[in-house]
Image 1 (spheres, one colour):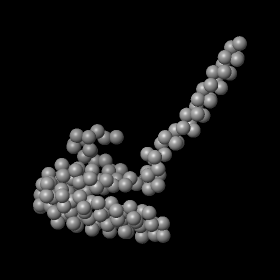
Image 2 (cartoon, one colour):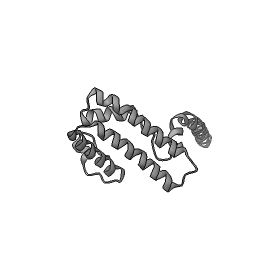
Image 3 (cartoon, rainbow, N blue to C red):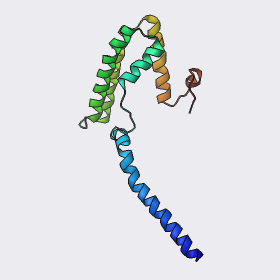
Image 4 (cartoon, rainbow, N blue to C red):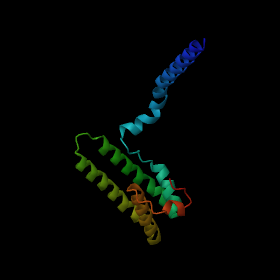
Length: 146
């Protein structure tokens, strides 16, 4: 009798596990498909970036209004390059770098000298994080380090 109950319980758990496994990819696919399509890169969100830079650099409303189209143009250029399968990895990297540098030049033209210094510091912090060199800056700006 114990064997039958144990067998029944195991079969039930196995069946539930299989049913959940089949339903999970269907539920997750809309959320994970964009991330999978772009590899390890997330698509940049110009609006979020504009708000973040607005706070961090203490931008005026006029500066933020001028910033959003620059960030949108950069995001579109980068997305276009990432989707171009005819490019070699080296060419893709160069074009993305060029789009970022072009946007940085336009962004810096909007900023005051003090804001330019803050922007350079912010970019350096982001480069450090991207290269795994967590220098404790996340903790100093109020965010927990992971």
